[in-house]
Amino acid sequence: MYVKKVAVIGAGTMGADIAYTLALTNIPVVLRDVDDSALKRAQEHIQGLFAQRVAKGRLTAPDADQRFTRIVFSGDPAALQDVSVAIEAVPEKMALKQKVFQELDRLLPPLAILATNTSALSVTEMARVTSRPERVAGMHFFYPAHMMKLVEIIAGSDTEPDVLKTLSRLSEEIRKIPVVVKECPGFVVNRVLTASMAEVMRFKAEYGYSAQEIDDVIVRHQIAPLGPFTLADALGLDIAWDVAQTLQAAYGDRFDPGPELPQLVAEGHLGVKTGQGFYTHNRS
Image 1 (cartoon, one colour):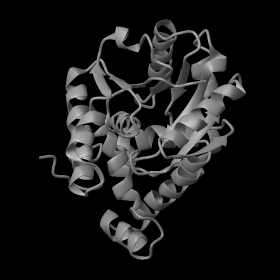
Image 2 (tube, helix red, strand yellow):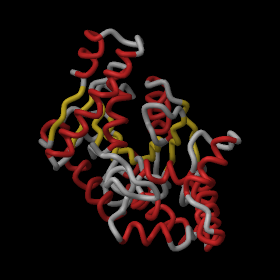
Image 3 (tube, one colour):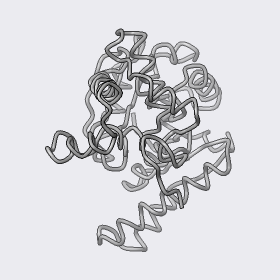
């Protein structure tokens, strides 16, 4: 299937990063959100990413401007009428994602592919609220999407092989490495990542180390490029908690992150986006 235009639904940091990544390779994009302020923040974020490439000499200013114009920022459902692939990037709540998929099913052409960027939820469950479950799959980017190369392509129970091939080719076109995986809670990467993050969060609670001390050791010994607490704050602690709960329900208490993560979320401290998480962040 030829992909002529892609929609990204949800203008948070992940949605904005995905839209930027598509536009960078000259693919027309509609970035849709019902919140005008979210669209404005996404526009500023994407402009900043293009400016960074220009500053590093990777793009000329006119070329960056031209690629930025490939993105339409819109809350209008009519903007989706000629989209080939829609990538949903809203929060990790099944009811919300199903509502988005039902709307996309009504608005998009019959052969359009509906993809979810979910970290851990069931693709099949989302697909079956639509009239086209065979055209639904997962396309899971990793944070930050404009830098991370891997994309998990997830088949639901009803997904046609052609859909997986199309999303894999699209991933390669935007210079990512697609890996087709089977559906299960957390898929492959987040099943491994969330288990390790849960263990280190429990370790912090048990032994009283600070987030900074643990992150410094992990980065200094090149175990990972980011410490787990820095990563969690960047991802959003609400998302980390949602994923942890999904995987704990599926696999048991080895995915229990301990008391601090749910406490921070309950207090509204969600990391970088609120200015406070495991760390204090300057939001200016």
